Image 1 (cartoon, rainbow, N blue to C red):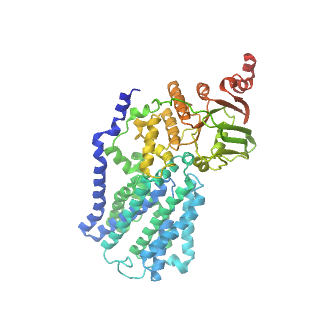
Image 2: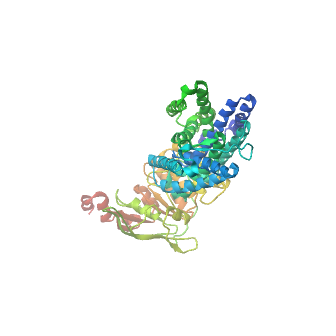
Image 3: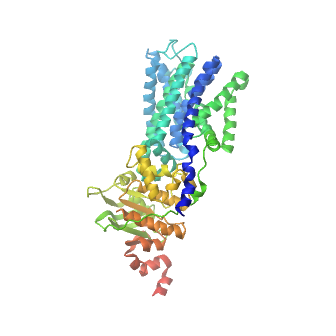
Length: 605
């Protein structure tokens, strides 16, 4: 591809009319938020006030839920736990003469503790099992609220003391309540925006997309999820305190309700899960429909809101799978350069003028053994890697190569033996977790490529860059520099899901290189790509080596093995059967037999 062609394909990313789009979007957002407050004030009707108070309430709750359910990808259907905790904390303390403004923060603190205690074990569950566990905990809290009737009022419920005024958050008119909940909604939106636009947000989305790839990039996935659920729980509890004051009466079935939890999640799903303003759009769209239907039909419309939500959800899933925000982006946003995406894997990579000399040992694998049940996957595997060296790890399928890689990067713990890595100070240490390996300068790719599909090329590489930089601007600059060095510069704004397999493999290497590793573990990065891309991939690996990075590569493409390797280790049935220079190893009868069988060994002889 010529430079002119690459520039033409990248042109949409620098489209001049797009330069003013962020400003217009900001103005539209400010006007939209202002309208949510000004419309009911201008109309002055008490029912309209109630509708917009409900919009702000559920927009705030859903935005808080979205931090966990959208950003982190943990489908919680038990968020009414935190809402209920806030409601009960506010009224119980109010009965003691303490203002709900204080009770709001007390409830938030209790909710954070409950969230951590509940979520830490539940994060071990995957898929629907996490959602089912949150529902189970929600039912536990409802039963506890019924049981401790001396504190919660039990099934009878609790009525707030009739103390009017700002100190008690109770008013005769609806306008003050709108002011409070509107301000709280803005705080919730601001928290979601801040998280998504900073390192924590990138880490959460990366964890949602590919947890193992995030761990390889040095992300403490459990820690970032616990931070997310803590913020989410605190915000939900604060809204619960306000809503209790607004309703003036609470009881367990309503405060710890599965229906409420589903509603909170529903607004985000319909508006656009994982987006900052999707939950707000969902609430603005749905709440007036259900509230107006209930207002017009009265008792004849009991449960109608659930029917409305269900119909809308079905339509959204069928016709707008990315929610209302996704539809709006398709209508008003710009399209990615598809042609550029398809060519993302073919840019050339410059080589250094001179290769550094091979140095001392930097990694040592010492007698690695691993069993899976009765299967002995690796048997007494020992080898070392030197500074500036490329070591190829080859062998037939099922030889145990990927298992060795997982032990070299902390994803598997050996049954016996261990891995030692020389740190920057020159001392050998024994890391154990993927985060430990990443911290000491070990980066890896995966046999089955693991991009963060919903993120752009730039954002994917930024996840790696955050290992070195806390500031988003610094990480973005480092990501762009790495992307250009890896031949991905023209496709920074393209979503990773649109790249070819060659582009995805190059992207994964770029994400690791943004971490500035001292050791790079490459797991079949040339599998499935054409010969032209293989040659360019070889040049890329050599250019990385020339920067002083030590490389261990699992590879089946013998062209790459012969061109790249300083040394080759052959695994078969979990054991090392040969080690040496590439040209010597490929002639070894034991290696030929392992790959092709005894007949070929005899024929070669």
